[in-house]
Image (cartoon, rainbow over all chains, first blue to last red; front, top):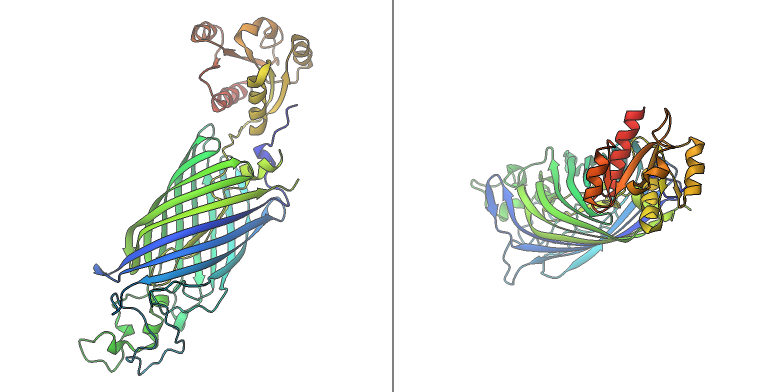
Length: 308
Length: 158
């Protein structure tokens, strides 16, 4: 008989992959309640190392660690409202973390380490991979800055990825939906949904192009224009930033209900069955209580390892 | 060869971590291997006998096996007759021009394998369509078309 790897074999213990990815993101204005705030731009560059390992034919463990460098693009004297915890307006509340990252230079740190498990289910043209993971800040990076690299909160995403590849077709449809339980800053619920949907087409066995949508949707969270950020003693109308010396404002990025929908195009090319190169480019098409993505792209290399 | 399996099979796992919003500090990371190598799946795996010489026949046999079918490749008439005599196959794929070697053992009796002829030219295809329900055209049909024809045949036989 002719020997060839059959799809029905499923994953095996020891199957693994390693992926290295570079990501660039340029963000622009902040959109809040139909108002647009021109906060200049930020540039983020991230190096993401991730991998997975099949424990058996069903269970897979995975982990990821991003190293992120980010800058706030501004000028001196400052434009675009740099966040400086050393500003003199901090009187009633004084930030305990004095690091100033919005000075126009790149600032770098390890972001959030993630580790999790997924379970594989396949039926006909469908595959399903429910998963749970845990993300924890890998360094104590500041979160009060436009150049902050993250929210410095632990998270527990619970979700599933799924794919549908019609029989005898070159199309493939993939999705990923997760509900992310988040550490509660100042007791506030900032859990959120993450959704990624894509439709792709294999032009060749080793070349696929796809279009995708990705969404982050914080269920609750407050608006940038919320009075919660204003000092109780402030007169009306409040003056920014003088009346914003509150612990809530210091943590405003953690408390705001970010909602953002991106659209992008991606490409995957296998140089060999063991090596794959991927790329994508995307930008925001809908933004609420968040900075819009002017432009972003990713480049990644994946190495596959077999158990045999 | 086995290394290829993982790229085919497990490449659709992906996990979303962190956020994809872009407040002052937040970034999206989609962890996972992303899109897999394309492999067609046979929803009804069957036993297929491929008769032919050369790279094309070998490649066809490999791809059918990769999709989940049990495949045997034979390169001469002697082997073909021996395999046909075994009664172990659902489908026989061979050139339409070789039908005289195949047909006595295929489709002639109940339980015999179904012959799926491959025409080399459009004229040959037209001629073959007068005799067989399904005909493959060598220059045009891809592996997915072969798989679809085999699937339809298997469904018909079951």
